[in-house]
Length: 409
Image (cartoon, rainbow, N blue to C red):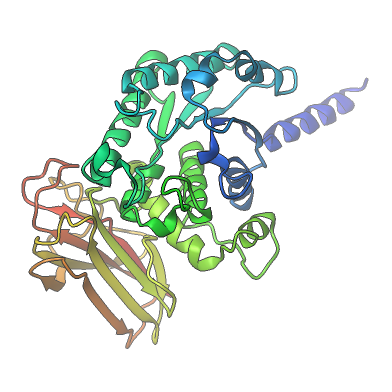
């Protein structure tokens, strides 16, 4: 074999290696596939492909009604780890979804066992794939009207906080065992909290996900695996990509995509969010154009664009808090950055203005106008601030929304 042939083969093998998508293993139950007959794994695959990543290989080891205890100990489920990939390949991520009550001390379950099983499955996978990263698929509280209220918890908020806290603890347990960065929590349940456990997002049993919830879950898990938010992904809903076709088959289009993308990005890890606020139950939603408002953090506008925004209190928590809508102007591409002593404030405190105020948020604080001018190269940053302490940050004074950027073009 000539030296040139060796070089060409090496280059070919290198290109094949670069094009290799991630290998993703999913353990879970009907929360991962309900309402589609498939669901979250396939959706993560198509979102990744739409975003320009090499198409990942997915293996869905899903069993209806199963628990992490089952996945951790069942011989067939354990065998998937070593049998489902071609020889020599390893897993990049394993996604773990527990049962409805499994992450609680309710219904015969214990949170301690849930956490132990999360570590055990991670150990099983890492015995085959030493660098595999675990993504915890944080589930949700049941919708309003479910018998869990008040039999198990007074309201969905208490159920949510227990599930959320134990998924976060399981993530910490895995990192304590295998190292920092070995696990992440995909906070799907936080998204349902921002949707206020509205029954319209659930199937009639008040627990299982509708297609919109499956979409939210896929987005949150995509973000946790790839370290990227989803609002910047812009599927062509007039086209026929595999992702668009998959969503259309479930009655989902651009409006549902944008709504769930905003919620998913608002629930992403703080380091991934464009302009992170406190992370409490306070939500800024905006629109540039005539479509519905959403929580995506960047919008484009020019003269004549209809701009609207609102700050909402979720789950009644900030209903009685005075609220300000803050605004700042900066050269596009050079945002002010978080305030030195208040990292949850994204506007420049020395030059910001107050766009609107409200004595409470029982009704949203809203603002709308048609842009009377254009200022290319300039951006406007908007952020909501409620004068009520933040449990998320520990601030005794205020809570903030994530900020949104309106860029002139």
